[in-house]
Length: 87
Ligand SMILES: [Zn+2]
Image (cartoon, rainbow, N blue to C red):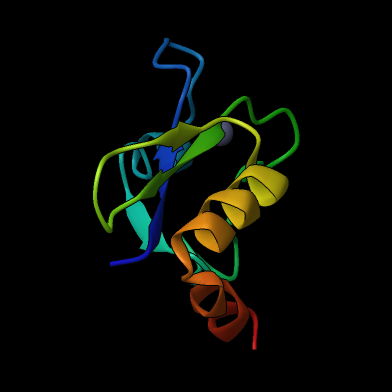
């Protein structure tokens, strides 16, 4: 239970091999994808994006992150998950 970040590339021929390797990779909040990178951009010109999914029940996809996730977690009474992730 928690919030999972998922990496997405644009899926076209311009996606570099580094980003392609991260496509659909999932990480818990506060966990790096690679080499200390917690989300796009991986490099200059990177067009990747990330979605967040609450895995504790139901499925939500949040395009624009922090505020929305905080609201959802606050409503669900699981706010301390986020706080713990930041510590
Ligand atoms: Zn990229």
